[in-house]
Image (cartoon, rainbow over the protein chains, first blue to last red):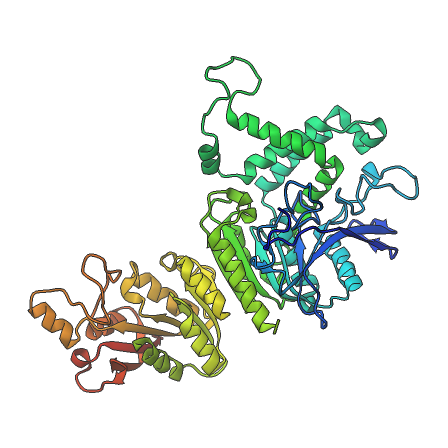
Length: 380
Length: 195
């Protein structure tokens, strides 16, 4: 099943260890760290066919393929990446990594701090989008990739793409910014803070050092994920999927699971609480909140994007209210102001913010066409 | 293909390296043509999904948005040319789009089919709405809701502060100089804001 012709197949993650200290935007320093990553396809001899995939809030390095024959679900963007897929691994060499602060193998709050022999916990420094980009450049250096044919990402991943295009314009040929925004609105920060408060006020959080207590702040993580999940879907798609369907035929007059939507959200919350680190969740949401290439509006987005030289594909989804199409159009306007090559598509989709992960035929055809044209232009 | 004649006429007016915006750019053919023949730096605006893909396949910049809502993403006088090729007659708010062309572009180029072409006139005299190669639709399924003759368009320009600099009239791709409003079926206008 895992050797189907359009899958990258069984993939083994790799770890790159770095001993050169990284100074973070917060002023803190990490003396050494690991980045876990996966690659698909073959890097060509002049190293011109590399694509970097940046992950979103709860993502990681496992972008495509399977880790074993037993693994039930493939990587999180498997519908996009593989042989003959929109991002064709027959032509491109694709790199996915887990960002610094993550909980899937790269150094993060749940990793052991070599100084104390204990998990970092609350002592793990804050990380920003710019810090991630810096770490990603080091991984690129390690892999011998000077210029990426493309860097792509959705949501928070799209913010990393934007940041790359500003900080390292010479290293990005094509920038695919999907379901993103140039910075978060107050409403978005508010959602993130409610999610954080759920975790921070869970008695099992122990100020971030719950590892030593042998517990995890499950209730907090679960609530955070349930809230997040609501905002990633559209009203329409929830209505279509669940409506007012009851688990049992009659009202129970209790607080157990009655409506299908409750069952679904609780399931999603439980699944997430079992697999994701609470401190990582806090860090990732803060990275989202802090991201603002205009430095808190002291300059315009057009001025912020002045250094950029990549060609851009900006994509939004009609029903996405968390990163609405109007936010993508702010990015498009700033790119137009800088005379950069940019194409923008607003995909008609029902799935809200999550649509960027869905195999919508038009969306996939667009990425396929854009990437195929890019490959030809690069002589791949 | 009549569009090619229209492209060549437009390209003659566009100097090398010009920055152009093509409103309702379709599959991006004109922009690709201007890129290849004039090294133009171009962007298209389109609403149809299939055309967005077609443009991406040609390596043409395209922005998916509804022209009828105006061009708020674009700064005043930020383009050398704003082109509207055989799209005007299908637009709801012609006054708005012409105003936006003049705001965003230093020059406007508009291509329009001629409702006053003699074959169309004959069909009207015969009691039927014209159907021709340029206007291939039936009255009930046509996207062309604002058809006009060349004389009508020029009167519109006079009344709306549009200064026509050049006009090129064609019939089936060949130049027409005699009785243009009768013998021409396509005209390309280059204009700027008056004053």
